[in-house]
Image (cartoon, rainbow, N blue to C red):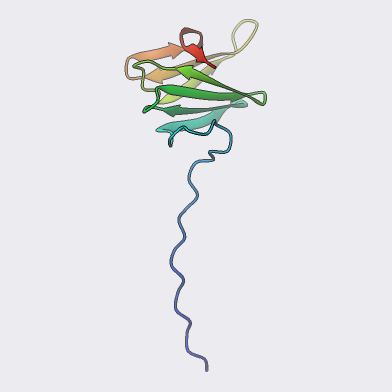
Amino acid sequence: MKPMKPMEPMKPMDGPDSSWWPKGLSNPSSSGRQNGVRYAFFPGQHRLVLEQGGKVKQYDTGEHRISGVSQSQAGQGASLRFTSQSGDVDLESLKEVH
């Protein structure tokens, strides 16, 4: 009978999938996906990053700390609304950063 081999050390678990947001952003404090839209919020940089239809856009969140997303299908198109410490924030109210 052979002696038991020592156990291998645990490997770190994979973190969030950072392959879709621009390099240079730290780890997001919140991220998720809903109905084909991915989002990640980076409080240190005051950035919200969205991926929709294969396109990635960044938005300046100012003092908002984004913690969730909701999507309405009313009217002619979907609109995104984010939850912050100050209440709901419409995507249209955030400035896109290029």
